[in-house]
Length: 471
Image (cartoon, rainbow, N blue to C red; front, side, top):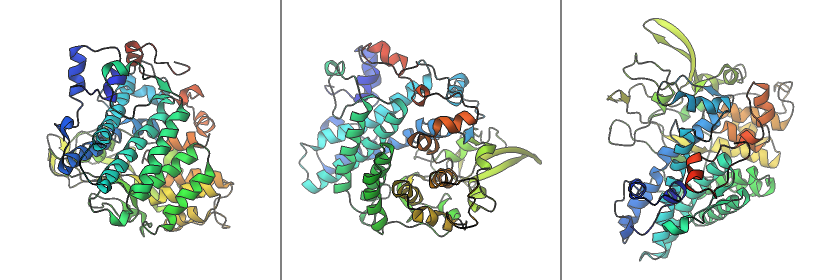
């Protein structure tokens, strides 16, 4: 095979042995075994599906954004017996080592995901398909690539940027580009996607990305870069598009049969009940670590008292989001855990509940809170609070003593509205609040530990790849 994936170029730099090449070949999108021979729209649809399937790994309940946003924040702890425990606890303890096996796995997973988008983008340019179809495919793949790079740049900072497949020799020169250049690529991809993608109401295939998804993600990118003006402009377009709305009740958002509602902006699709289908693993992974229900719960992202106590008295979102514990043979075990993705009726096969719950990467409440962050206008935040039947920011009964500024009100609202939805750590980093908030709660966080280390094996394979400061 003449084309080398980004995954291979970054992970196996300097190692062009046959064993490494075999592992590279195994990284081809599983749904598309003929990636070198894209010709028809059917071929491309298989490849596009393969690129979307990468979401299952990046947003896995034990994937990179879960470990970063929940375990490295004040939201969650874990009681997990699988895997290398020391490597897992390094995230929680802010003691990540360059040899951490999970950091390396997450690096691989992200670059595999980027490859799956890049290979489609590379092949579609010369394909004999309509210009409209070509632009639509490119826009979808650019959105996915931007999403993956956005996660990665927040985790590692400077990154190797590859937007086309490379040969083995070319891979040696692919070094880390400044984070600013990574963000430039992300913005470029999302601007194109927002221009070419259809509105949500025109999407006929559930799970495909829309114009509003590209705009919402772009707004979050602008906010991360401190550009509130641009963020406000693009997020107001989402707000004014009339494509999305808050559901009447917070509880309406959750359940194995709740899929692609008016509040969903970008949602990962799962199909429960079949072991060969992409069933959802959030229920099992986030359940306490026991097996009295016929399956072993993963014990991942068990809720801290600190998160539980963040909710105001009477906030209905708390009991929809968090269980106080569970019954084991008539004994109640006090252990708080997330319940948004519960599927008690899921078929069980081989000790796994084949759950049907989708996962929302972006939803309208998130966009509204971002819009308040961008504009300084509490109107959008208050829409979220009104849905929760809580006093508005600015009302006499709002808990002003605890959240005296709009910035603190946004921080509080995002934590309770989006609990365990993989946002908290990135939110705190974006607002420069990670160090003061987490230090006060006993975390050994420093400025340098706001980034993960570059995996040691990557630097062993190519010494020209630099390491992050402090590692």
